Image (tube, rainbow, N blue to C red):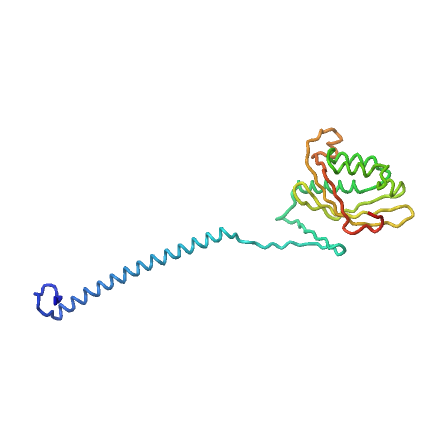
Length: 242
């Protein structure tokens, strides 16, 4: 069998205390080198693991965007259960000018269309014609409704001694070309009690290029034209059959 000897000692000679001490020093140095290498490898593995974990978290965040919660106040009508959002105005939130102009136009259109006053029938008809698409369904239906020969015409139903007044409740945009208008009508006839009904109208419109006569420039300068008009009762009208 072979036997290790201390450095500088002849083979077969038993190492003395100094040789044994030198062997221990060599063994300890090798152990420290191995431990340092192991610590370095473990450190690299830990750094790589943290990097992989970070990339995984970032990738998951891109796949599943963070969701936010926004509190939206609602108004609920006690009689009909109809709900609508409340838009508040403050220094950080405002309604755009174009949106306000559109809402004002649609609101005025509904007031004119639903109002009945025998004294101003011709003027009202002219305004609805000016604010409507001549090829649209909204004006065709209005023209048919206001025909004196139509038994459903307010001229036939209410006559020359009654009227219908309109009270707007809300005007809310549904998209860039559609608005929902909620309103009340108060119908009064001679010798009878006033009848109040509540309605919801869906109004579609577009913005066209009109010939800018003085009259158009005065009453419809932005060229808004209603194309479709649908009205439904929020509650069944309290008087006349539908």
